[in-house]
Image (cartoon, rainbow, N blue to C red; front, top):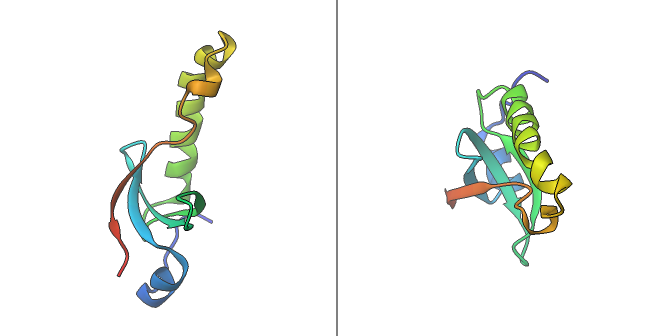
Length: 86
């Protein structure tokens, strides 16, 4: 799928928060009661490959840190939550 286009009704039903992944890719998140991210989707009209590219570039950055044994303390995904979906 090249991009995600969902009606507002579906977004409100399936996701709970607006966020930015790594500060560059706008996404929708579904966060459970324990604060864990259950699902993520790029926002409407944002190509899906932008999220995949951001994760790939982040993994390249994180690889040396994991190789020297500091990976367990390193953030695997970074999201800046910007609001709740109402």
